[in-house]
Image (cartoon, rainbow, N blue to C red; front, side, top):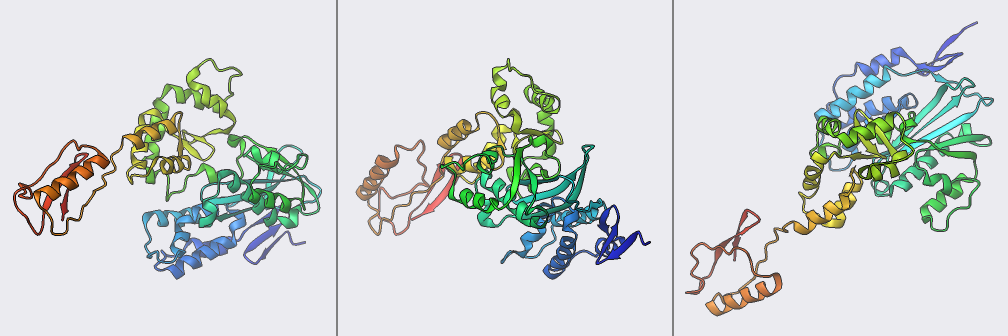
Length: 414
């Protein structure tokens, strides 16, 4: 009796399904991609084995970015690293177990700012978990603008419908690390009236399935949580100018955050005696540690010594308060972050130049009149600098003067 069979790039055994070494060898030995067509070809072959690779959509995000219209082709170090990581994971795939309708089925889903993922597995009587398949996809630009609760909900809908053939018509357990969704999608509770319409629609789609939805703490959410635990290489920490190692070292040196890491990895005390840790205790069930860095859901907890630097970099494009808060909430967190952002936004100079068109009336009286109007609107300037202008003494066709604002000089031509 034949115990092993190779079929369509897979090896089938009594224990489960695994990838064919011969087929993987062709992918792993592919030379560096020199154009978009070769990148697409590589991704297509990797996606064929996507059910073996957790977080594939996340890892491939830099490569998929090349598919966008108007993006010039360039194999940056980041994209080369993505290719190597995909090849590495292909060579480290585990055996996927066969689906057995007599064994309890669990579906775990998760979402991040840039992708959603799901894993379906059996939980055996001895407590061990046997993965049946992984699935993931990147979020569209519209979906990236969803609130985090909507992204998590979308991940649930995606996972359930992706593994419909395993789940439809039977009872299963649905795991999420976003506790509010247990109330919204829970079969024993009515859908809250205040839930958004999008969540209402998704809840109706899930009514065709029979499941118990359970909350699992983030740091216990091993199978599906890779999406939100690994920041997007395109965005964090590089876009914040923060080095991962710097954040890790600063966190380790901070006495308060070191305590938080200890609590996360061991057990939280029943009572908090330190008022400085109050907010961390409130968020205890949503905190986790990844490579020495504390995460609140998908956001990096910034240690005190790097907080001002992170906010100053967020403000480098001179966003207003609301835009800065929205941007920060998608990436980072620390106690008092909104208050600090408000202070930075209010104290910052706009560096806005006001130009007044004088036509051909650059006489002394007209110039003084315009300056009075300007000062009445914006206040008296701290500095007024010119280049020995004769505007107050004679009419000129063209005037050039230099204004200094917040340490920067701008030459304005009129």
